[in-house]
Image (cartoon, rainbow over all chains, first blue to last red; front, side):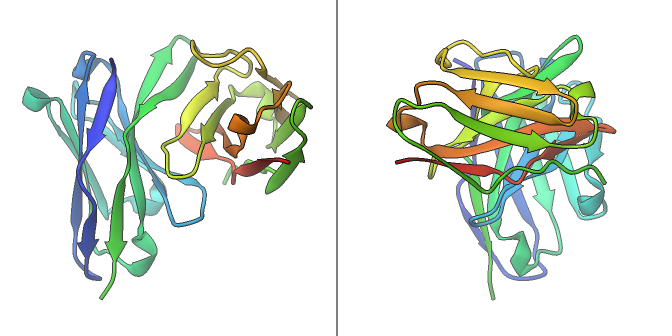
Length: 121
Length: 106
């Protein structure tokens, strides 16, 4: 079955960087964009951007430009999201999700299990 | 920037119909999705393209989208439907999520 498995939880100090991985299985990795969405504790969903696993092209939400980098390794069907200059308000669960795209509409399915990133001194 | 507004909470009795709204400027001109998120779990799509149900989603889930409002309707609500629900649409190649609605089944 289609599955996205993310890396384990991380604890980082303010100013550090974190890199979260998202390993895809059950489908052709290069055929679907991978998006990253985060959720702060008790808060809603916030979209961060996407990567095209086929070309490596990316598009980041304006809020994160200059601080986020999305990459992929097609040999192991894995996408990565690296966030730098972490601050306490970056503490959140980070999700990867596949965008299912058909002409004129799309949806996120499935989602990874989430990776908790805690930023604390 | 584009915003989607949802009520923070909705309550419903078991077996009754729950309606959760999502408001945004000319939202009816866009395609709306709805995601269900239970505590400690990842979101799951329950409605896409305004009103379509993915396979495996019960028929009691339905959706509509017109004007400035998209609506998720759960008919014959069950205790298992208690969760947070998020609407989502696209604006200028940016995915926008509503703030989420906590559905309580009393």
